[in-house]
Length: 228
Image (cartoon, rainbow, N blue to C red):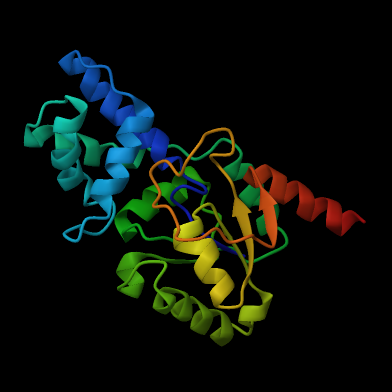
């Protein structure tokens, strides 16, 4: 199984909005979480964007005036410094531990390696292997990212046909995994909320092979299928 990390396993939206809310409390400004995510999404995908999450300090400078927050550079650094404390979704560590008893788990993240190391610890270090933007030199949905993972899997004795790709982002993962012929599983983290939050909206929606609203749902289904 290959996994997106940020947004699927790690609650990056909660991490960002929590950090912005803390800045807002200090400045006496109430921050609307959904508005903040919409501004974040637009800023994050500007042409001058840097690697994630290093780009957060630049992003803050773009979105702070729109949210009525102070624009001092130190607050952008404060947002970036929040990354090591971002939480795993409550269901993710247990679900990954359960899945790891049956499958080799491979992380595929657009985050830089330093950030992934924090996320991996928060998740209980469940991965057999991990590919970050630092390792691949590119970001999903670039097919080249996936091809490097395929090469690793094939060198390890597997095939791409054996992979189940698990992710929440239609744009970064589900659409491109379908085009590359993978079986995929959409973890719809925002099932109780409208829109795409902090993740870029895809040009078109891809119906996944499997669909759950949590990692626990996926792990339960795997165990039920094995017991049948």
